[in-house]
Image 1: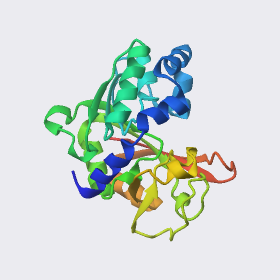
Image 2 (image 1 turned 180 degrees about the vertical axis):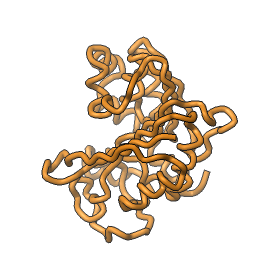
Image 3 (image 1 turned 135 degrees about the horizontal axis):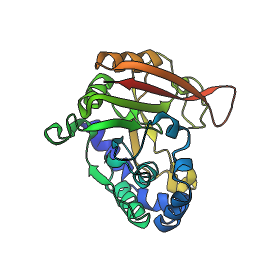
Length: 250
């Protein structure tokens, strides 16, 4: 595990379980809501899946299981890859409460065991802003390609690179050059939900923010065939893009 990954692991294991309980509720309470309407909990991403039953899904940086568990309830065979043991704890309890199961692999995504998981998955799925945690996007996309079966699908949804120059998602980060390749230290996404004293105690993450062309070209260079590119409105301003989704095939 490299230094950037070690720092991000420290950050994502700081108070994460308690945060999910505070924001999403106890696992039993969230599980009840998921069981009532699992498709709704997948939000816009449900439309990018052709099927759920029996589909092998790698949920990259799947965090607290808020997307992995609905997928499992719908019949998918889900493996979450995430660096945080705290996230794994909440996700595992959530799956148990929803009377389903997921596999959860805690570790650096760039060190996934390809002897075990290479060519294993029908779908590699990620959402919610994860690309900036990986400081070599070509290496990252190469790993995503390696995880998929021939004919498999990449569903990559992330924060729009406009967030480099405008705070369209209210991250409270300073603007930078759109073309900057600098690594920056930034606070944990959920730190802003705490009072200032608690906020100052949170470890920092190390991020590398990409341009749109860097992301798309990394997908192509990894060997994927680009199928679709969608932009989604920012939750703070519907007139500006806040997220995007790439669909690509192997």
